[in-house]
Image (cartoon, rainbow, N blue to C red; front, side):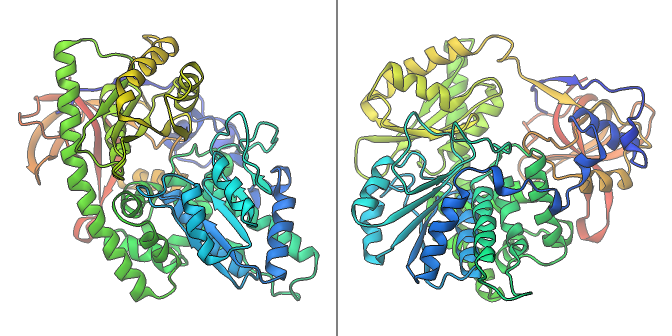
Length: 574
């Protein structure tokens, strides 16, 4: 069994709030603990989406796109090699075609050949397409050199991005990013795909005002919401109220069978049923298969799958994604074992661990280091940056980092860059995730600088790993009915976490499933039994007779038999 975080219970009011009338009491307390304070917060209709008016640059972006459409100029969308970038690219291509563009192509940088974003090397390859307008999605706000090169070649550039900007902005024709310093748009947590969706909403309004469509012929952009929902969940942006509206609207379309052929195909190869698809399925089943293409091969495979309207072709591409993902899992497992061994040796020699970890291995793959950093971060509760050779024959290392609450990773990298100019060649990202590159010879220098920055920003309380629980469930509450209610109540995700409960249980029986999973029969304090599963929970020794478990209420529908089960996220001796 696993050891892990200290479990803290959220404060629960003794009285149910007035807005929760008609809700299951457990759901009411869960929602209240997440800041829901009115019935309006539970209204996920698309009509509740924030209007695009406050997002700076939208009118200029709409005018730029409309001019390209009216003059039949070639538009090239430049995406990114993760699931947010892939879905944003698909939304841009599909949406622009819906709104009248007849010449739309896309390109995605190769992780090894081009690096991240609109780089000068990628711009040189775009020249063969002769674009009049380049539209970046999920990138561009840090692409100073690439934007400058594109404009020097006569290309106009529209940057749509959500990453935090640096001190200066690229000299693009238009930039749309809710995180620009003077932008007053309140929904700062839009993913790249969400930003592009808002650009399309503005373009439709612009063209509507100029009489582009006869009555009843205006395109319905709601058909893109399945892709918007997938990309938003995949990018782990906080699910604030606006993002919850986007995600809930997209999931409704998927469950109703009105999703694109690509999403349906990827769900099929992942053995997920469309009618019961959840944000968890998006995050842990669909997104990894799309991401795998960008990590190991070519993200164009994922984008083509999402763009295909032919179910047979989409399924063929989804099967390729599935195979690439299986390869990614094997590679990640080997890299993860090496990383965990390095941390274990670190503990033996230099306990306690430093406040931040910098890991590197010359045999690691640059496309997978982010996943390794994420897993080590979860285990050590430290910011982690993992590095691998860039793979282009140079001396460059590519790093990917993951952080913990209270440590803004991109700001920390900016501070290192300001204190030691030239040490970091390129960097960018968010509070919780970032990417960077540096010379192999500078790795130790960077490790010292990054650890120093972490020491200044993190105290003992921040490094104390705590997990919040929604309390215990009575045996009678742990029902299939409540599991279904919780599954469908809201789009759970980053910043709006899925309900977690905790309690002490007796272990009636257990068995190992596969290589590392545990199936258990537990018993509540009152004596009622319940089935449980802990994925990746086998550590080579039997579980104790009593455990304290942190769990989600799940549904096991193996072979069509639906029953409730506990999904153990952590189990320690009681």
